Amino acid sequence: MTRKTVRIAMNGVTGRMGYRQHLVRSLLAIREQGGLDLGDGTVLWPEPLLVGRREHVLKEMAERHGLDPVADVSTDLDAVLADDRVDIYFDAQVTAAREEAIKKAVAAGKHIYTEKPTATGLEGALELARLAEAAGVKHGVVQDKIFLPGLLKLKRLIDGGFFGRILSVRGEFGYWVFEGDWQSAQRPSWNYRSEDGGGIVVDMFPHWEYVLHELFGAVRTVQAQATTHIPTRWDERGKPYEATADDAAYGVFQLEGGAIAQINSSWAVRVGRDELVEFQVDGTEGSAVAGLRNCRVQHRSHTPKPVWNPDLPATESFREQWQEVPDNEEFDNGFKAQWELFLRHVALDEPWRWDLLAGARGVQLAELGLKSSAEG
Image 1 (tube, rainbow, N blue to C red):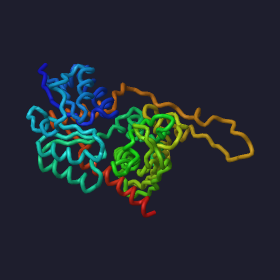
Image 2: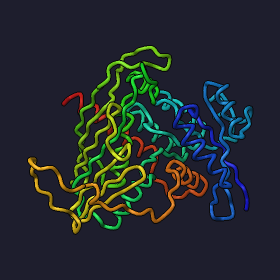
Image 3: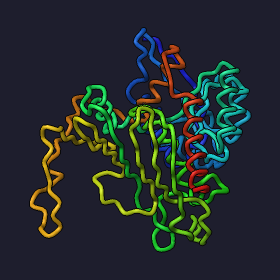
Image 4: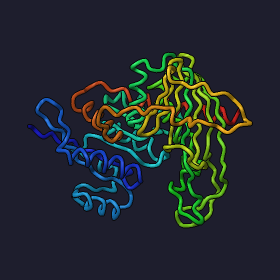
């Protein structure tokens, strides 16, 4: 086996998602398995270079995971991008800082892999895609939800014709994010300030775009109502601030082919579901409820015939009338699975469709969702 090193500048790994999912559970996990076997006698070996503003945090992180706290850490993005040994630039920063950094990376000839949304507006997102194409660099956008076990099972059902004609998709996403006064918040305060790029529409509508596009059909129309249910929150220093960004959004999407999707997204809802996100898909031949990991189905031949009678208590457990879809395979971490595909795309030029243009579709849907909400 020949080992080929790929140097990856990772900007934003001090954040929860950048650290847990992209560094630890993706690139370091690939190293722990001995690298990525390309199948031609070559093993691809990722070398992370941690980039950020807080040097002491980056150094501690590098030492914790067996990286060099000097050679594998930098607070100078320009110097990192000027380094010919760096092959890929990855961005998990706050959205407001992402666009300019990606432009610099493209100009430096680096391949691009980034979290979404890729920019704060559609015009900027399209410009990034055009610049990357013109520069001839490979580019990808994280679209992790479609690699989750629950949605992979849902895709298996769709491909197998289980649903017949799909009629509707209903999604419920969210959980209660504490305000920060009497219990600390689970999300950073910038998420609730529109001036810093926050808001649940710009965060979650890009996810819903690729989930709907990949599984059920391209979005053709959107109607949305965005709102700020919790007007005052407390930041990381315990100081109150005005929440200027939406913390809940209720969307209706018409899909190519005629199916209707309804998705509620909220950071001000208490979970009464089995998982933090669930999608119910109803078709002429059967229905399914899929979450992050699990998926349950009910075929038309096993569908009961309930009768509406509010004067009598229900005598049947509706949840027990569904069947669990078996795994039938081992599912890897969704972020890691997509990282491996992108690395193969860079190394072998294998097909890849989750590029900056796909990312721009997500930005567009968020932009139109906010416009729909504003204009009624």
